[in-house]
Amino acid sequence: MSEKEYDLIVIGGGPGGSTAASFVAMAGHRVLLLEREWFPRHQIGESLLPVTIHGICRLLGVDEEIERANFTRKQGGTFRWGKDQEPWTFSFANTWLLSGQGADYAFQVERSRFDEILLRHAGRKGVDVREGHTVLDTIQEAGRTVGVRFTDASGRPQRARARFVIDAGGHNSKIHQHAGERVFAKFFQNIALYGYFENGKRMPSPNEGNILCVAFDEGWFWYIPLSPTLTSVGAVVSKDRYAETFKLGHAGAFQSFVDACPLIKEYLNGARRVTEGPYGIFRVRKDYSYCNTRFWAPGLLLVGDAACFIDPVFSSGVHLATYAALLVARTVNTLLRGTLDAHACTSEFETRYRSEYVAFYDFLVGFYDMLQDEKSYFWSARKVLGTNEADQQAFVRLVAGGATTAEDFLEMRGAKRAFLEEYVASRTRQESPEEFFARYSNASFDANAFTQNLRRGRVEVLAQATQGETRAEDLPVREGGLVPSRDGFHWVTPAKEGT
Ligand code: FAD
Image (cartoon, rainbow, N blue to C red; front, side):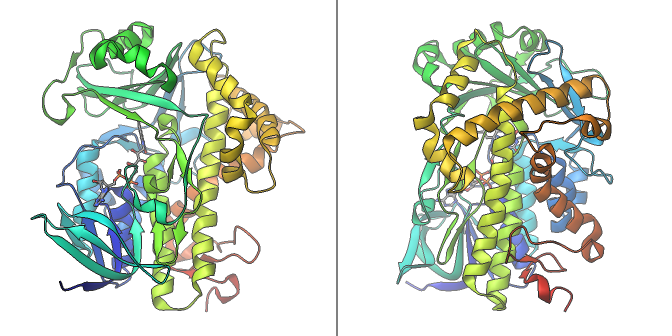
């Protein structure tokens, strides 16, 4: 059997895989992407963040095609969440989360269409895209990944070799085991049950395209307007209530959640559930909150859900996958060029990716902690889980680095919750983020560091996409660390910058 040689093999053609493949092909390298499905294929993860559209898609050169695709424009998010019984809204145009510059909206996307646009674009950028090709495992030689074994579209076994393999095979991937162990987050041990509806209610303008998230006693709902008439509606509930609740069947369980959530019931009043095609069934996702102990091993790198995911509530999944794709492309491009050693580049990738994950993880724990009905099983169980140190220990070590203990972590939780509650209250009072930060103080909690961490990855990508080589000098994120090259697609040592 002949073994074709590439510079890079990418497993999986979701946003993480096609973005990484494109960025490496754009640097002139030979890239093979193996995707087991035929696109378009269904996927969840429909609510995007502005950085994906105005940062990553722009860098890929696919932003105009995305603009023309007629996806629902998302100005921000509307939440019935926390103390306030009234829904509150944040808009990307007016929040500390974003640096602005025309990048103040995102899209709600049908992932089948969005992912296909990115995959076809990768093909146009020179990636050898093969659908209907399933990777079975990697090829290992002397402790290094040197290629993959796969079946082609006719089911025939094949092999291909490459200097690097990226696993972007999503949550079902098994390849990540070659890099480390998948550790599950106890805190977010939930289950999502979702379906699609025609003619659900819309929020008044200008928020009609917003994601609506509604906390209720059993958990929370997402309500994502995918077109003027089509809506994705999902209930996130406790995993330990799975068996009991699901005795009713998916439709019965879903209806019982809707009945328990007056706002979603009102929005679905008069709507019709889609019962045909890819949207015509209820789907369930569980065990989706985890992080790998390592994101790389010699010759192998992980991005997207193959490496980690947290929780659907703040639309972070596609951002984490595509941000990691940019980081991994810098790593592979630099190593293929041979200008820096492997340890420096892979450590830079791992450090930046993990810190972006941790920033979102921290934020989401604080967000879940915001005051909900203490009598509710779901919300009080989150608090019990959070205070069960033994349960949290393994995960805390992973997200907080060696020094921080579960006790420190739990102490910080209260401060994050208080900060987010204050911030939300300030927004409903129409206070600007600047006014809020000028007056907010809490001696035990560094609000600026918290928000800087949350912004850093996104600010970096937006600066590269919108200002290119005229952007301000990039700073290392740790002592002795690397920075992006001026073209943004390689790593360099800070001292070499500009040479
Ligand atoms: P995927 O999109 O899963 O793509 C992986 C690809 O790899 C697939 O096409 C698969 O067919 C292919 N593949 C797998 N194994 C193989 C193999 N062996 N050989 C070849 N190909 C293979 N994110 C958001 O941004 N916004 C949201 O609103 C949001 N909501 C969510 C709701 C829920 C309930 C869940 C669970 C997640 C949600 N997410 C959301 C997260 C989002 O779905 C993922 O983070 C995102 O899809 C990750 O992209 P990816 O490219 O890593 O993986």
